[in-house]
Length: 189
Ligand code: AMP
Image (cartoon, rainbow, N blue to C red; front, side, top):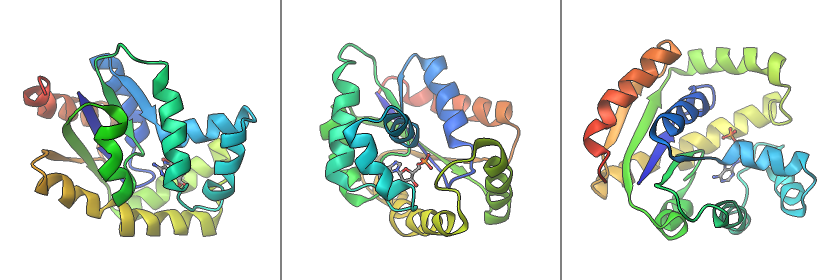
C-alpha cells in the first residue's frame, strides 16, 4: 500500500505525511528530508545531489532512483509507504511502482493558494535556514512544481488512482482528520 501526498512547498505536506505514516504504521519517504540528511552526513550521493537541490533544481532521476533504492533496501518487511516529495515528474511517476513494488492506494493533494504558501515559506525561512530558500531557488522550485509535478495529478486520475483534494490552509489537526476520513475506503489497496 502506498499513499502519495502532493502539494506545493509550504502546503504542509511533510507534516501531514508524517502524521499519516505514524497513524497507519507505514514507512515515511520524504525525499527532501532524505536529501538534506544525506548531505548533512557527508555521503557522496548526498553531496552530488546538493548541487541541484540547493539551487532549486530537481535532482536527476538516476541519482534519485539510486538514493531511494538504498533507502528502501533496509525495509523489506513493511506494509507500505507514505511518499512525500515523490514522484515529482513524469519519469518518476513511471518508475514509482517499480521502485516501491506496491500499488498506489490514493493520492492526497493539499491545495493552498499561492499567497498563503508564499507567506508560510517566508516564515519558515527564518526558522529552518534551508539552503534552497533563496529567492531564486524558491522561484525555480515553484516553477518546477507547476510545470512538472502538478500535471502528475491528471496522470494518476487517468490511471484510475483516486486523488483526494484537501484544503491545506486549515489547522494541522483538521487537515489530518480530513485525510483520515477520506482514505478509509482505500486502506485495503
Ligand atoms: P522538498 O523538501 O520536498 O521541498 O525538497 C527539497 C528539494 O529537494 C526540491 O526542491 C528538489 O530540488 C529536491 N527533491 C526532493 N524530492 C525530489 C525528487 N523526487 N526528485 C528530484 N528532486 C527532488
